[in-house]
Image 1 (tube, rainbow, N blue to C red):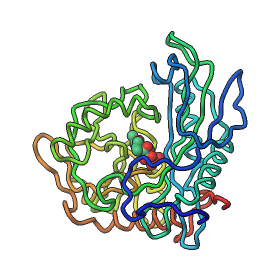
Image 2 (tube, protein in one colour; image 1 turned 90 degrees about the vertical axis):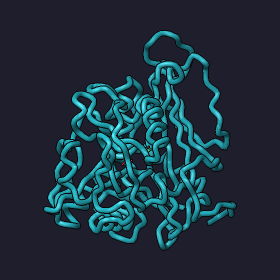
Image 3 (spheres, rainbow, N blue to C red; image 1 turned 180 degrees about the horizontal axis):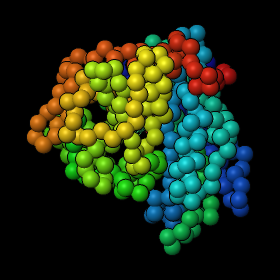
Image 4 (cartoon, rainbow, N blue to C red; image 1 turned 90 degrees about the horizontal axis):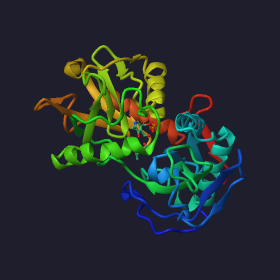
Length: 342
Ligand code: PLP
Ligand code: COI
């Protein structure tokens, strides 16, 4: 590492830490400029920006991992680029070429190389790309100018201590509408989640689980992560719905479950009144990695899956292989890893 920073790598939480550089690029008159790095972590934008009033903004989340040999790599960054473009189309914002997105992430990681936690510490460098509508505007319409910026910070576990079972409660609230923006990574979905999260946390739960917004019969999201369940018949089941964020971690786990563990994989409706079908359950996402679900509270009862204190064997295997690939200990499927040249 080129420079020393005073960080307790083993005790990182999921909190903002100012790193040295971020990337910024401006869109105007139909084009993105080349973009550049800056050491300024403040944005100076018009008070009338559409991002501030009408939520015309979207973001991504991915990580850089330090391998045993000291290299740095990104996990499936092209998938984040594609998902950002899907969010951008939904909000009538200009798309970003996949290579521009990946290069921006790599440039930010390289410029902040000394903030990438050491191999074995459990930490990673979390990368947050976002796009916002800016400029002088007051009507509800798309902005005429945009900013694409990428910043990063070292992080540890998002929920509790990582691979520790957590309990969740089913909320009556919805985070998104049936044909709304649930499948897109837009800030409004997260604004809608603040109250249900607070209510769940006040009652001692790690977070809440959302049901489908049309019928409230099927499991959708676990806070800011996707749900998966394991049956006694060696099946990996994860919800299918138009209002779930298509999690890159979830699709990676589906692949690992099938190809590495020989499981049968389904994306289908998961009825909340049939939790008995699962012997293990978990939440998955970039920030959450895999968080084992100890129990789910529904209608006043806590349904415990494997255990409230122990992690089930299949969840452990999925975690071992996923992290092994991300940290470079296990050979990755073609195209999953993007090396950062440092
Ligand atoms: N669901 C929601 C609502 C999220 O915010 C996230 C985080 O990105 C996920 C699921 C997991 O997606 P991914 O695995 O791509 O990080
Ligand atoms: C992620 O997993 O990258 C997320 O975006 C979750 C959360 C921090 C919003």
